[in-house]
Length: 439
Image (cartoon, rainbow, N blue to C red):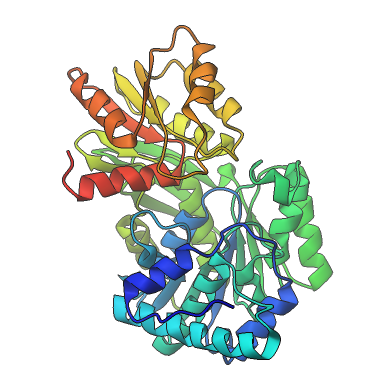
């Protein structure tokens, strides 16, 4: 194994970024063996595990916010990050400091050097595995009351599933994404996500369809666990108030609870409802009150999900067909008379159907299509051909996210709202531009 000296945060980050994100997966036995070699840090924490196609990060954020409102200390590992790799590691609401990032990085790096001598370099964590191992070491040091883990891709074979025990498993809405890895039907994808369900811990699942419900119910029964389901029938929208959403949720323990979301994203009602139900199953109304649930939901924010980064400029992480469906649902209810869209997408997504939904919605007066600073982005020529199939759609092609946003801002009319969607990476690029005062 190639060995080099790493002494700074920047060098540690660079090393991790050079580790391929999509390599041949290690076996779960390999991942568990490496975690065991680190001292089984996961055994020192109460773990809540979250999987699903869309909404995982938001559900994690609501879980964390409610638990913190109830006085618990919480660690949270999520992905991807938007502008700073340290966003993935949060304890007590704070990102991991750079010096701690370097320190836990080196704990793993030094072990890899020793393994290279003993095993001729046959094992090296993938990009995601390396970050997961770092999170486990760091969180165990901090001794949180709860540790929330978001899966990366899938569930059954995800690195985060290497943990020994869980307090609760949560599975969000199932959609058709990463089909080359997870399967080409909702039921096949659900079977992979159901892999996080474990014996002795309940599971709380979003009811996507009868087929996925049956998969989750069957897996729980096989393991002697119980699966609880949440659906749209469990909550109802009340009203928009100054860019917030009021809605009511039926709770098994508290009856009907009135909740407020500080977002315009109507899809967050679904994610908040799932998180509240998960908290109820976890706590059994023993320590967490309805008032703390209200406070936790109201105080929650999640970057890159219908986030207003400039006046009337919203970035959203919708990055697959189901995400675009949810994004358009919010846009259609925003009460605006004029809108424009900045769109970019990764080449491994089903972007043809995403373009069809966006261009065919009739919701946008102008669309600026761009390419992101990654080789995984869909090429502009292909996207231009797709949008050309919708002659009623005013579309302009821009070579960068910065150029695209400048184009939309320069031509913005009175009262026009600008949306950014298609990829979390695009959301991150726009946020970074805004953070560096480019606009």
